[in-house]
Amino acid sequence: MNSLLYLLVPAVLGGVFTLMNSIKIINEGNEALVERFGQYSRKLTAGLNIVLPVLETIVVEDTTREKVLDIEPQYAITRDNVSLKVDAVVYWRILELERTFYVVEDIKKAIKNLVLTNVRSAIGRLKLEETYSSRDRINQSLLEQLDEATGDWGVKVTRIEVREISPAATVMESLELERAAESKKRAEIAETEGIVESIQMLSDVLDQKPDAKQVLEFLVAQRYVEANEKLGNSPNSKVLFMDPNALNQAMHSLMNNPHHHFPEPDHPAPPEPPPNPPTAPPSPPIGLGS
Image (tube, rainbow, N blue to C red; front, side):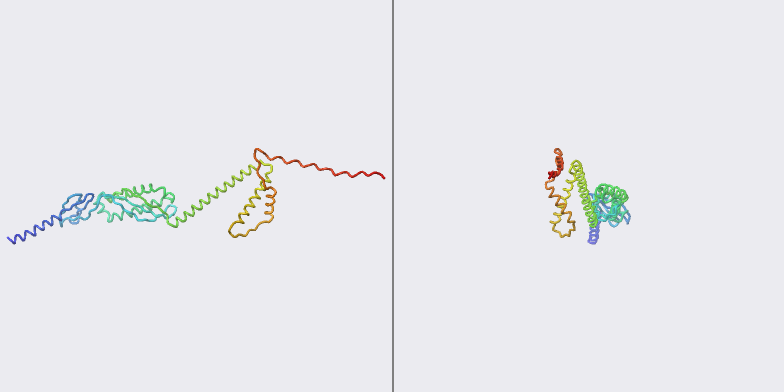
């Protein structure tokens, strides 16, 4: 009797242990694959499942919920040969776990390499200026290409977002210099257009004035004196070579016309009075005969 008891107790304990090992609970949102003698047998879904000990083995268990794959920053070259740093994130999920496990060795690495290849290709078709305004178009193009390429892997890429597109530091410096030069160019063009317009207005006014020559000489002399005054007040050291007669002529023009101004259009300048007729010299006295 005792010997029989000694045999039954280990058998019962072994049966309980085997039964416990054969029960496999899969959480909601997960799936598992079972192999029997090294070959694919079936897929386990959420809930209570029975697996034959020794004969069957669970080789993988993974979630079917959406996953996030962060793509580390990579450099890509635009169509106009500008190096950009591109950072992206991929949202994907497993549709067929058996294909994901048996077709691809490392699904995350495969998706990452595929994203990098397509990102470089998409950036290479655009110029630098187009990359800033075409981010949505880039995302949509990448999504279509990845969805087509990953169809045999049993996964679904739900969306992809390019988070950052930034030029390298040297490119940023070049862009800043280019923008500064462009701003300076526009300012110079505006200043030149203003000068041309002022000259045209002055020309139109002078064409209507009888004393246009004197007015123009006065304006030139005034600008000349103002320019020399500003140059003299400048804190920077300077050496100025100038014609002494030019300054004398300018000062002479200002002194002779201290209050020169344009006549009003409604009150034209009065005509200059005609010169006085020359007077005849006095006749010598008529002498008397002796």
